[in-house]
Length: 609
Image (cartoon, rainbow, N blue to C red):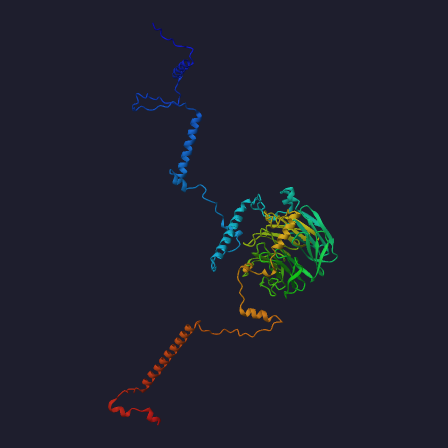
C-alpha cells in the first residue's frame, strides 16, 4: 500500500512561492486609486463608449492663482504682438538705440565730413570712409554721453513774477545759498591799486597785479597764498602761462616770468614797454602789444619770437584773442578793430566798429560773437565770422571800461563804479541787465571764473568777488581743464599739451584751411624767389601764348588741313561776292520812257561835260 508523500513544510523553495502569492493578493486588496488616476475599463471589455472622462482633481487656491496669471500673460501677448509667431517677430518693443537730437549732434560736430569725391584709388577711398565712420561714431557717443552730465546751470528764481532780478544784491544772494557757496563772496582791501585780476584756465587760482608793483598768486577757493612780492616798478598787465606754476608780468621796461614761489625765471628784453598780453594755450604763444603798436608773439616752449609786426595804429586801447582761430583782435583810437596772425605782416581783416576810440573788446568762448564798446557810450555785438554789420546795438549811460563774456554767453559791462551783467544779449535785444553790482570803488578790470558762477573784479582799492548765478559751465572735462588736478596729473597734462602743440603758421581766419590743398602758381613761386637777395631773378614772360590743340603729328596735320580748307572757302566766298557786284554794275539800268518827249529829258552826264 502506497502512502502519499507529505509536503515538506520546512523546504525553503516552497516557502518562497507561498510568500510571493500572499504578497500579490495583499497588494491587490490594498491597492487604492489616486485622485489623478482614471477609472480604466477592463481589458476584456475594451469597448468604445461616449462617456465623459472625469478627473478627480483637488482644487487649491494656488492652482487658481497660477491659472489666472497664465491667462493674463496670454492675453497680453495676444494684444501686444498678435496671434502668430511671425507677427511677434516683426514687432519689437525695443527696435534699436534711441534717436539723437540733431541740436546735440550739431553742438559736438567738427564740420562737414569727407564725401569721397575726387579720390581715385579705391583703397584710399575705403580707408577714408572707415575713418569717417569712426568720427561719426565718436560724435554720436559724445552726444549720448550728455545724459551723464548731472550738474545743471544755476539761475535766479523770484517769487514775484513782476519783480526785477537786477534789484537783487549780493547780500540777498548770500542769505539764500549754502555756506560753502557763500564763501565765494569776499573782498580784499589792498593799498597798492589799481589792480588787474586774471583766473587760471581751470578756475582754481587767481593772479593779481597792481600799478604800484604788487604781484600775488593764491588759491582763491581755500585762500592759500602761493607767493606775494613787490617788483618795485609798475605792472601794466599780467597773464598765466600754460600751467599755474608760471606767470608773466608786463613791467615798466621788460617782460618778466615768475614761478609759483615768486622767483624770477626770465627777463625777456626783446619785448619792451608792453601794455596788453594774451596767452594762446594750444600754440604756447604769449602775444603782446607795446605802447608804440608793435605786436609780438613769444613761443614760451622754445623761448623764441614766433612773429612780430607793426600795427601802425598807434597806442593800443584794447586787445583780446579769439579762442576759435587764435587770432588777435586789436582796437585802436580810430574805432577800428583789426585781426592779426603771427606769420602775416598785414591785418587779416579790419572792421570799423565805432566812430570814436575803442575802449574794450571781448570774444565769447566759441568764437562766434565779438562785443566792442566805444567812448560814444555804445556797445555793439558782431558776428565775427561774417563781419557784415552789428547784430545788436546798445546805448548805455556811461562809456564802458571793460567787457567780458562768461562760459554761458553772459556779458559783463564795467563802468566807473558799477558792473552790469546782461544775459542772452547776443541773439536777442535786451532792454535791462540781468544783475547789477554797485561799489564805492573804481573798476579797473574784471574776469569771469571758469566753471564757477563767480565774477572777479579788480578795483583801485583791491579785489572783489561776487556771485553771478548761471554764468559758469557746470560740467568740466577733466582731460581739458581739471580744477581738482593733482601734481602728477598736472605734469602729465603739460607733457601731453607740448606733444599736441599747434604751430604758429596754422593761425588763420579759417582754421579749416589745413584740410585744403594749396597749389602755388608759377607767378607766386617766382615772386617768392625775387624776395631772396642771394638768388638772381629770372626773366619770365607771364603772358599766356596760344598753343595748337593737337598733341600728335596726325592731329596737327588734320588741324592744318582744316584751317587751309576754311581759308579756301572764305576766299571763294569773297571772290563770288566781288563777281556779283561786277555783274550788277555791267547791267544797263532801264530808264523810264516818255515816248516822243524823251528828247526833252535832261542827261546829267552830258551836262557835266
